[in-house]
Each structure stands twice: as structure tokens, then as C-alpha cells.
Length: 115
Image (cartoon, rainbow, N blue to C red; front, side, top):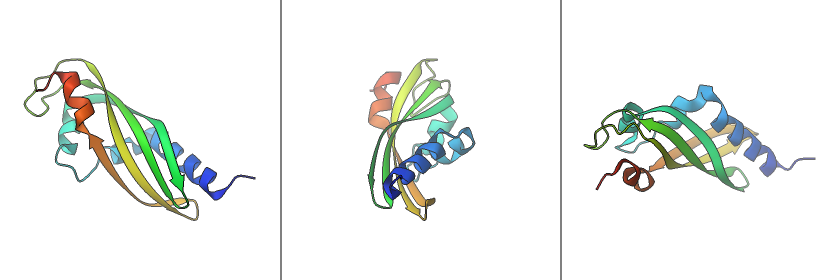
């Protein structure tokens, strides 16, 4: 029998990997979030690592995308990039009750030769 934590990990992983949820993963309160959506196309999200403790699940996610628009003053490069995103989920009764997200732009900027 699966534990509550195992079920929570499965729920979060399925949520992240479901293409219908991709637009949700692109939204954060960070200043750069809308710019990422405009500058990077063909975004795909994959789970790299998940930590779970009770109802809380933290996921490190890799976003791969093609740099086809201006981003922070950097012209499009056409390069495929890989950026890290972190998501914190809280689950109640096996369902996602809330989540927050952060993009790690420090992993993204060097790939498009931003100084």
C-alpha cells in the first residue's frame, strides 16, 4: 500500500508533466515570469527531484525551451536552453490545494550569453 507521501509525489509529478498544466507552471510572482513566456518557446517541463514531507511537496523542475524572443535585453539566440524552476505544493486529501513557483534565472542567463 502506498503512503500518503508517495501518493502526493505521484499527484505532483502528474500535474507537472500534464501538458494542460504548462501555462500554470509559467506563472509566478517573479518579475521575469511574463518575459520568460514571451521569449522562450516550445517549453517542456520535467521533474528532476522531489522532496516530500507530509502534505508539502517541493519539486525541482527543468524547463527546456528555445530562445526565440528578447529576454532582459538579450536578442533571440535560437538556442535550446535548460532552466531550473522550483515549485512548492501543499496537498490536502491527495489534491493540490496551493502552490508557488520560482524560476532560477541564474541558470538561464549564461545560456543566452547574458552578462
